[in-house]
Length: 378
Ligand code: FAD
Image (cartoon, rainbow, N blue to C red; front, side, top):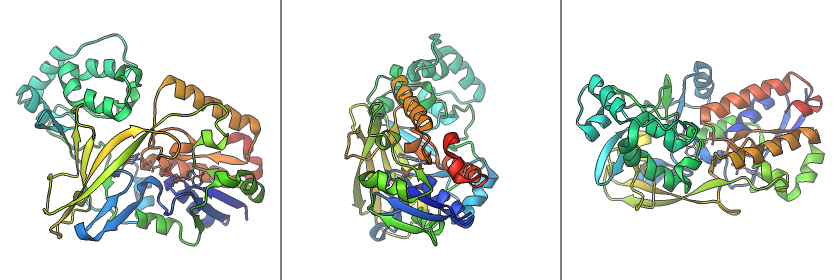
């Protein structure tokens, strides 16, 4: 094969691509704007607290696919962590995702039948299920919506929930039993030794250059490689010619505390609108290691995104969807030897297992044909 491929971004999409293409005989070079590999999955060990800090927000690996699970297990071992959420609202703790414990905490009902009947009473059908608020009113009624969803959503997105697509919330289950496992998937866990180790293994034998921004010499890089895998922001690639894609950003405040266990769980959401952070993260609960007397706690504050801040969440509005579509059309019409992949390249929130699956599929497609004739189908 022997194609010479440049991969822009050492996140999960870029690193899986690098592994697959290198193993198939391509010569890959990865460039990364940041000073570390791992993209938003990056973790670093914090000796004082004896845990790994999830530097860009808490990451729980989960998948229903045995193939993806086995693929990841080539590069790490997962511990037995199971995510069970909690939300602190108006001074009281509630179980998340919504389950029979939550119904008990809010309404005092004790059985699945009582919870079902209560749900039927409180649901409000508005006729519009496309926006987040109306969808929630139709699913869980005003009380649960206002307590657990509304404030959190407004803080997270700084938009009226009626302007947001219901797709953001649809993946959150509502259960009438006591199952408080956040995910429905068959497999979940946290990599033992942190996420960064996975990337070290994915990138073994691959040339990686850190603190290199593709955009500072885009045309130069394009001229030197047969194909580019670009996992940066698609609007930046095209010099924002079709307009700016909006993101939400985050800010993290970290604190080491002199206690073994500060909050008893890895993540506690805060739904109160007057509290500026959305959740507190206690990282040692991910590692399941309680050997140190101190603990690392992070408060996560949503904030507006502008150039210079990290892009975290694409914002799911019709305007952004139209702008993204224009970039897609531009990419196809220009017939560039570029694959746009990952959350920034495709302007879409993806869970990690989805990113791995997408990179594996795309790498197989690329390898099945000559890269240079791949242009139009990317
Ligand atoms: P990234 O990780 O963003 O990698 C892209 C890389 O490209 C970055 O390192 C960036 O610096 C680099 N780059 C960009 N532009 C350039 C350029 N011009 N030149 C060079 N390099 C460039 N998923 C889960 O499955 N479970 C979770 O619990 C979970 N929690 C999350 C929590 C938060 C707060 C967020 C924001 C996401 C979470 N995710 C979770 C999603 C997960 O982070 C993504 O699926 C994954 O990181 C996407 O990988 P990626 O390679 O597409 O993007």
